[in-house]
Image 1 (cartoon, rainbow, N blue to C red):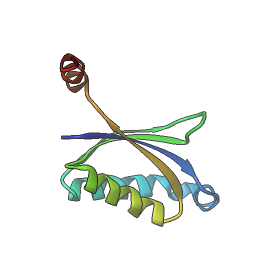
Image 2 (image 1 turned 135 degrees about the vertical axis):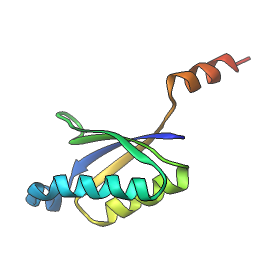
Image 3 (image 1 turned 45 degrees about the horizontal axis):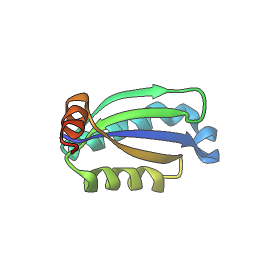
Length: 97
């Protein structure tokens, strides 16, 4: 299943309602599960991003739909990166001419 690294920053609204953040993370996990995927990890981070999540989701459309749904709530802004596992990375590199 494809992996997606989701980096998020709190908006003004999100930081004002920070105490609700654990419930929002849980809702995202449930949405990922309902869409046929799962959240592998969620980290609170320090630096350029406030949160880092790794999700395994069925396809790019599901990933985009979840990211747009989260963004529409107005609590975070996300950057989503499609991630390749080490075995996929090795296969890609091995296929180079």
